[in-house]
Image 1 (cartoon, rainbow, N blue to C red):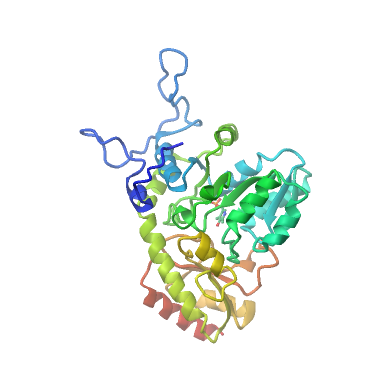
Image 2: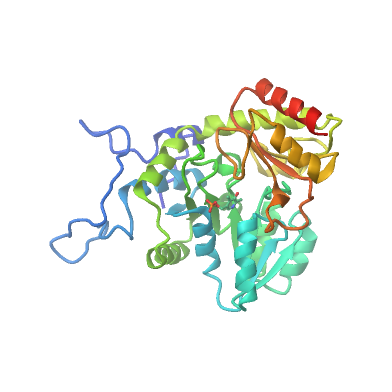
Length: 380
Ligand SMILES: *Cc1c(COP(=O)(O)O)cnc(C)c1O
């Protein structure tokens, strides 16, 4: 595990971690190492030997060092967020019980649903914001408690410290998908979670040009198992992708701060908009997750969900009417994007049909507002 450097703030870590040693003529920027194999040591493999390209790669390691320092654990990079999710889920023994938010990221739910159907796992959905309800389900034991907070796309905030404790009391490994928050806003390992998972595709890389995932843990045994899974299943990233993600990570703090400020301002204005019946963003004082987010996060994130008064059709008209915002799936890039989530058949049915998820970017907030307000007025 990288040594946590308490003296440095996350912003400084984002800029400085995972660089080559500062020696004369060393490159300042981490190089991309394109090599499928490495020259062997004269004797049997030595500690630190790179060996073969499916085991590790210096460019992955640079990103892993930086993310590990930010999350406070040991990071492993994967080919995508789903590859990392799958690596953690595969650690559950056959017939094991997994407790998961009933409305989590749909890819995670599809994966768990398929494994449940095959009889590989027993999967129980819970209302993640209802701590007592989750505790009740955990009372009969679990192997894995999967948390996502705030959830995608309902922005429900789970009580992280309470649920980590309840999960451990049930004998479960506690995993937290920290994609929405990033380590700048929330560090679940500090609350005792066993493993953090990221879709690096989203905020960490931040430029909508790469797919990657990561798992971060302080538990060395779990780290070894996840590393073994990555190696044997071949769920490995490309070196160029790792480099793009590392370049993106250098500005993570600036992007998260600006996008979060934009999101809070837009949420505040949307809450008063006559064409909108409901706005979800933990920054809003009336939001059900507001108090919890204040207690356990260092910001509210940049995803906002809105429900147009005109229902699903008005939501689709809104998506078609925006000009600056991009109608697309995915989130966490510098560009502002939006999408009606229920257009995907795999989206949980508890997500309202009209719900439009906004991923607020780092553009000028007045330009974003003008486009959204105009599109709302013509799509009602
Ligand atoms: C996108 C996403 C994932 C999956 O990541 P990919 O990089 O697309 O595989 C997992 N969790 C959350 C919360 C996401 O938004």
